[in-house]
Image (cartoon, rainbow, N blue to C red; front, side):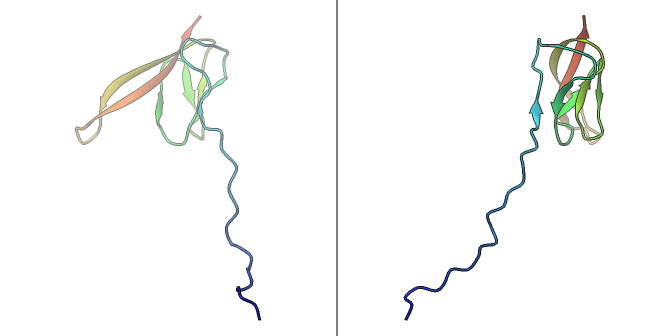
Length: 92
């Protein structure tokens, strides 16, 4: 007789591919028009001058230049203040 129960197949062992999110261009780096600056899900980073938002929250460079980041506090609709990071491109 067997001393252990027969092992069946597991329902685990799968995982999704990584989405490669995050900052693609850092402050001071030179970029061309249309380059991806940040890939994100949701509005962690906000668009500043010379940038635009793609359909999946990706931030692109609107003009060629150098990348800059700026943090500031914005007031939300209920009066709370939120720390936001704006990314912009300073035209060269």
